[in-house]
Image 1 (cartoon, rainbow, N blue to C red):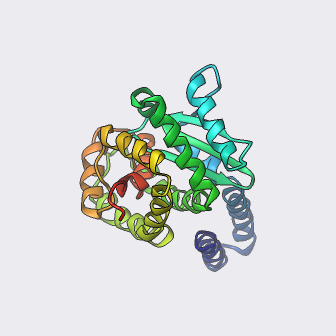
Image 2 (cartoon, rainbow, N blue to C red):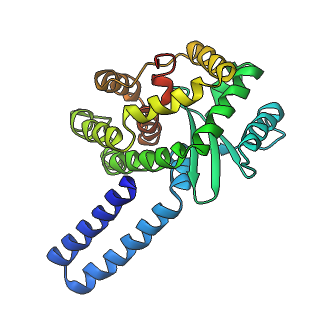
Length: 259
């Protein structure tokens, strides 16, 4: 998979730089530590993303109806082990994170408050459908790359106690956009939405839900930059990371526009 190839290429490049510019023993020690981190990222990309989204696991007592509907929709595709998380975001996104034999549905908490029972049912159906057709694993790794691209700049901005500046806005953001379009190009989301459209009832309910959520369409790079600049101005680096992950191209950006 392309995402894993890029991660492997980064690891090899780092090893070469460490051995070139550090004492061999120091370079090997640092390289081994980064290799352990590389394996952790490959094994648990979903855990990494849940951490940066500051997501909280939903148990049945929290949202019994949503919990039951998520389980029911997953069972339609013979998916029997799922976890459901919610998080506080800016764009009311949903994610189907998949790694190994784990599947996690992540929903922005405002969606759970605004959506009707029918829309919740359709939403979890679409997340299960995404996993069933292999889109969830691809999207998880693509989002992992997004978080890695933003990790260092946001960490530096936090240490220097500065907000998002032109470097992050006009250098890091374009790199993120390029990687996103390589790893999850628009045609893949169009292909997924064509599959979803074959389920007319679920697709209609999902379009209704999308129309009531107040969020910009972020598939165009110019709107992504402007939205990021507007929303990130007065937030901490951890909140900016949530915004960066949400800013990655999402099927909601194309919903209702696929023929």
